[in-house]
Image 1 (cartoon, rainbow, N blue to C red):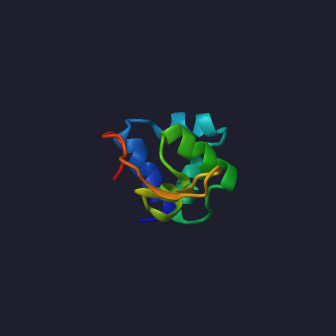
Image 2: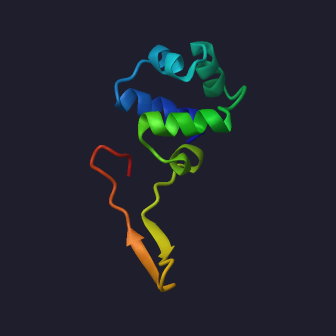
Length: 93
């Protein structure tokens, strides 16, 4: 699935009209069709704004992956831990 397909799928699932989405991004609705047809891609700034608006990660938009685990290191003791992420029920899994 391509970036545009993931975006359009999310818009459909969240019942958001493309015209409203384009307005939120400050672009014309035709630009979304250009993404869909593969003529161009959203800019990095748009991808970040889209991920915030649709409440998904940029990884999901770019790669179709949902992060399930984070590897962290304590800044005080340097101990490594793995944090499992459970997406909310309204998220794509």
